[in-house]
Amino acid sequence: MATSRRDFLKLTSLASGMLLVPNFLHTANGMGLLSNTNGKRLVVIQLSGGNDGLNTIVPFEDDLYFKARPTLAIPSGKVLRLEKGLGLNPAMGKFRELHDQGYLSVLNSVGYPNPDRSHFRSTDIWQTGSASDEYLSTGWLGRYLDSCCTTGNSKNTMGIEVDDALSLALKGEKYTGVAVQDVRRFYQASQDTFLKQVAQEHHADHAHENVEYLYKTLISTQQSAAYLHQQVKTYRSKEEYPQGEFAKNLKTIAELISSGMESRVYYASLSGFDTHVRQADQQARLLQELSEGIYSFVQDLRQQHAFEDTLILVFSEFGRRVGQNASNGTDHGTANNLFLIGGSLRRAGVYNAAPNLADLDAGDLKYKIDFRDVYATLLQNWLQADAKAILTGKHSLLPNLV
Image (cartoon, rainbow, N blue to C red; front, side, top):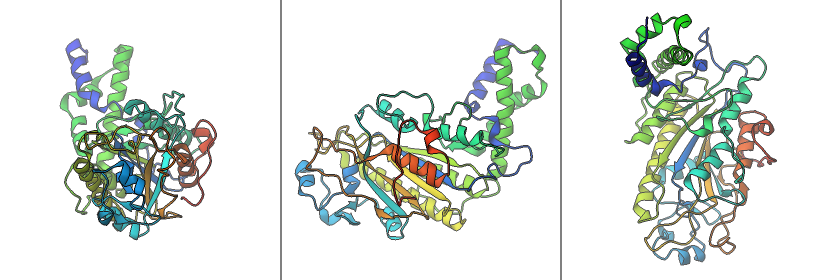
């Protein structure tokens, strides 16, 4: 079939949303993708925009907190108390339940040396696992995929991001994750009549090199979309999730996990945390969305006996300044807290001490835990990968975490 310029443009347009799907999503025998691994999976959730950690995990016994935030501080009587003088934002009632059930761990003062306050650069640092003066083109999870996919005779692995674009975190040199926001619509798009005809009738001998690459990607995408669609049909979640895109994405991840997919890494995000102005209401709404969405996700996995092998990491690219600004908000800061949620935590609750508000760096929190030490611990102890081969520099494993 001859390919005109118009046909090529149509092919490019229709397929452009599917080019991120690699051929390794399916296997020839249809069996599990990771039969030679420990079966553990990691779900990473990014709070995009820089979540204010001090109003998420509140140091309600520290007078310096209230002094720095005369109108923005959360009254101690409203805080959902945990331990070590810390408590949750009152909008996070479902996180409090996860804490009380032993499923939540809070790590304070997580960051890195010479922090960057740019959303884009700091996001790159967290997603690549780099130093602040190091620029990498692959993500820490993408390099994990590279490491696992090239080890011995193990079957191919993959990571899935439930979004319309793939984050740098999941991009490796040889293997790359896939971005799919709606599996069913993705499958329907791959079944477009024109695309199916092109895939069936094209001849490699007569195709331009660039056109041939597009053809191969299209055929691979159709196979992968069919595989994903077939897998998802085996399980439809009955858990009641809250309204909103974030909860819907978590439900999609739960369906993929419970359908028997052996993907090791899943990625999702919740945006809107750049709270320079009138922070209180906006952050409370987002934290409630986060808390209730993850709680439903956990209940869904528990019902399918998939929670014990799942670990959830929740992070933001940086925290906020300790002091509030003139607009009842907070500006870009440095170190922050992060959450680990799972049924196999070695130390649930508050992992380390609250930030020291009497010892600041030009008004910002000093980091106590390097985020790459968190990554190394999750890679080595949870996913049973070689953290030294995946992360640059020297990193320590955090004791009694997972």
